[in-house]
Length: 214
Image 1: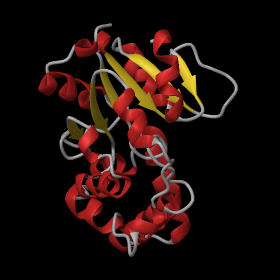
Image 2: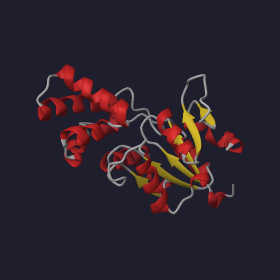
Image 3: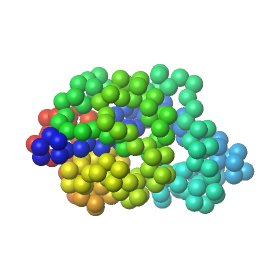
Image 4: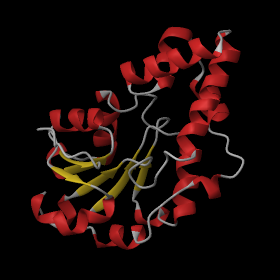
């Protein structure tokens, strides 16, 4: 594809940085506390609901909105407070150089809230590498893998699915992307590659040397 016809859609957490050591545990604890306080349940039930809704809808928030009438803005504000986000973000060296080497437009496509996403991108020094940021608010709270979020991004950016490449750590989101006609890159250390994945890389830093396969 010509440079101008290629658009990269990058997930944020566990794709552009490693959220597992500090960020995800913190968010999970915050979600558990929020659910306990606002639904009046104990920690065991709060964790059960958090995981159930994440598995069923791709995001805990969506389950809380559908089944409990949770205000999404209130939820996101209280579950994404970090005492020191700067120290929690773990990004690989060479990330900025890699993004500059990729031909085409680049868009962040994340289920995270905007304020958090903007902060992570600023800390990693790569905000200027992206032409747009689509977070859960801009997706009208239709997070991946819901097809509505995909269609909204495509419509707003006037993109056709065959010109887009989704780079993700979540296979369920890649499966939806492939279903609507996008190219897919799975960031994973797993040895097996599902049929809906066009390319598997251990790290996003490997992308430039595999361009010929996309």
